[in-house]
Picture 1 (cartoon, rainbow, N blue to C red):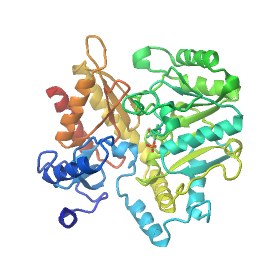
Picture 2 (picture 1 turned 90 degrees about the vertical axis):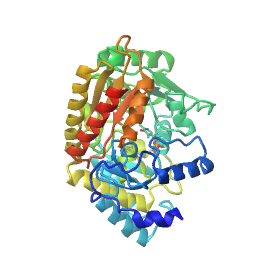
Picture 3 (picture 1 turned 180 degrees about the horizontal axis):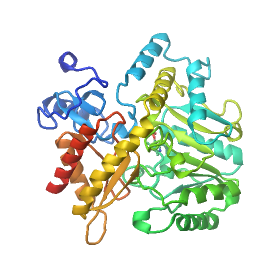
Length: 452
Ligand SMILES: *Cc1c(COP(=O)(O)O)cnc(C)c1O
């Protein structure tokens, strides 16, 4: 019954939605409460949610709920709708494709859009070397396949991941992920031949990039050995781990060591990719050319798609039939990806990410100057975070972080937390958000912090 009512009152999503914060009920309003009650009864409780609303439309920089509230979106569904929700080019491409055919299975009857996405990824990922790509459904699946490919190419088995790393929720990617709660706790045993090295975390370790790299490399050499190591996988900026930007020279030294030791360097750019950091890929901002890159999240304007892209000789090491999947590179998702990549390039969204980052950094740094509970403000482009601490001891303050995030959502601003210690608020607005809306959201964050 609510479905009919809602449909009548629901605005169309996309950039023409009124770009405003508008609260007409408290959050959650009555309709949202009804949905959350149904969710509690019908959906497994392991599936949580951040904002207690029933979303009915989104676009530009807002999410509208079933009660008519319009919330400012500083999360983009975890860096997915970077081109803006219901982007007109994405909507048009999806509608055209869905009316043509919805699936053939690329491994049964190939189609053009899959090849076009592979060509685009080969072109826009860092490095002028010959590249190839393969498409999958989710970020975790891309990471799984990057490891399969690296093992086949090198004939070696071990994989090194880093402290604070996040790579997904499947068995191998849980093993690669650092944080136990909530991602791994009780879900073992995990895949074998996965080892962990220390990261560069300038705010907490004070090490230079080369020193942090030397520390990691020494542990890798002593505890794993290059002769056994197929791949090193790292996010250029840790996402779930706390938006940790490594010190200058750290990534370059790790890449250099991998090259010298026949180890495949995999950059997991699933969160950092697609204009988010002010470049099409974060690797560019650090001057590195990964052997393999995993992508997902921002790739297709919200449709499920993921990819592994990399050096042709590595990508081609696998026997025919060794890679694939029923849905990987679904034609509707591929149509959305082509439209999204076009939007990133033709709308100058990487440059826009830098402008958004300037606003975020300036406002948060200003707040930090008068509030020592903000220990660190960091990030690149429109991937910015504030780390909250006890001003006396520098200890992480997860309770304050949770209170600020909750207060922001109650006031109509969707913010996400992250960090190994749960003490980081991350800002990942759609790159289509306007400055006015962004500044209004930051006013709300400032009041929430003052009140906490
Ligand atoms: C989200 C994420 C993944 C997992 O992607 P899913 O699509 O959720 O499987 C892997 N790596 C990084 C860096 C991520 O941010």
